[in-house]
Length: 332
Figure 1 (cartoon, helix red, strand yellow):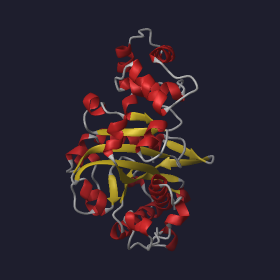
Figure 2 (spheres, helix red, strand yellow):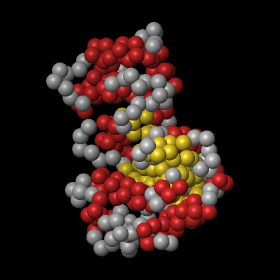
Figure 3 (cartoon, one colour):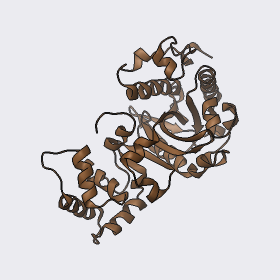
Figure 4 (cartoon, one colour):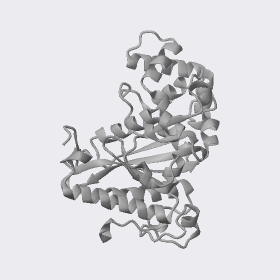
C-alpha cells in the first residue's frame, strides 16, 4: 500500500483512547480535526476526516465536481487501476479495524458491501469485516439491519445521484443490532477515484449516541412508526415535492408528520425555536394553510396533509435544527 493511501491516527491522548484509538498510529490527529471542548464535533469531525482521507485517492449516470464529470462505475467494469484503488481502500479499512473499534466500511454503487471493520461486522451478526463482502444489507444476519435495508439502499442511491461528489449524508439509525439496541449516527460519503474521474461506491462510518435523546425530543415516534427508525438529517435541500417550503415550514411539516396537534407544535417551537412573537395554535394553523397551498392540497384537514407528508417520506427526513440536538449540540 502506498504511503499516501494510509490513514494514521496519533495515539497517546485520552480523547483518542475514549473513541477507540488507544493503540493506533493514524496520522490524522484529534488536534488536527476538532475543537477539544465539543465532544459531538470531535467525533463527527474525526470520523469525517478519516472518511474523506480514505475516500479520495459504465453506468449511464454521471455527476459533476468542479466542472468535471465523474462516472458511476460498477465493479464488473473496473479498470485494473480502479481495482487496485479499491484494494488499497480495503487495506486501509483493515488497518483501522486492527487498531480501533470504529464502525467503518464501503459499498459498491449497487449498495453491495465491499469491506468493513470488525466492529460493524459484529453489529450485524458476523464475526469479521471481510465477511460482509458481497452482501446486501437485506442479507445480513441481523434482523434489524435487514428490516431497514430498503431505506439504506435508497440513502446510498440518493447520495450517488447528487451533483456533488463531495457531499455527505448523516442518518440516525435506531434498531436492534446483534450486540443490542443502539442509536448510531451514520455518515456516508462517496468513494471516488480522482485519477479516473470515477465514483466507485460509498463509504460509511458510524458512532453511537443516546437513543433517549431522540425519544425525549420526539416521545411518540415509536407509537406512530415503531421502535426502529432510519432518519436522515435534511440540511439545505429539501426532499422532492416540497422544495418550495421555508425551513420553518418544513420543521412544522415534520412535527405534523409526527401526528402532533397545533398546540403541541407551538409549545415545542416556542421552547426550542423561540421568536420575538410567541407562537400559538392559530399561528401553526395558518402555517399549515400555507403548506397546503404550496403542496397543491385543496383539502386543508390535518389528516389529509399528514398522509401526504408521510407519502413524501417527511417522517424519515429530520430538519437539521432538530437533528443536531440529538447528537450533542447545546441548542437548536
